[in-house]
Length: 192
Image (tube, rainbow, N blue to C red):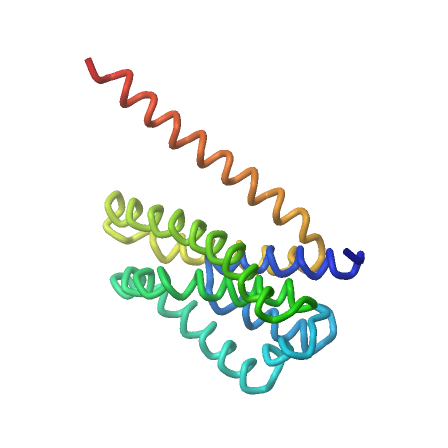
């Protein structure tokens, strides 16, 4: 694997992870990066940098960010994103493998991108449901803003230091796993 190819793969996988928080912002960023030559992809995947794709993803980003700040609408959006975010993650990961035959790139993109984005979406949606239960939804717009910031930060890091995004993701997954494991242990310990 060439050094340039390794960087492109890491960028695509990092962007796929970011799609777990916001579906369209990483797609828009990937399109801009492709158009500007910051993310080298093969010709068959260059559609992501077309005017049509940039306009579509840009408009979808604005709508997603604004709608996520509206109580009740944010939960409806999460239902939609149960499908949309893994698809976005797959599309981004496909770009990571664009230098191999398209059929293999698509297969690898789905295998890598969908679970990454879907897993992060599930964690985010669970947090949002808990927030709604404990704060009656009043904290949800603040959480949404935090998610916006994390996504922008993650997208920028994806192009500057994609390995760091993956390390942070692994640390976050490990921390979440430990939290869940400890909760299960404490529930089991309380049971007579």
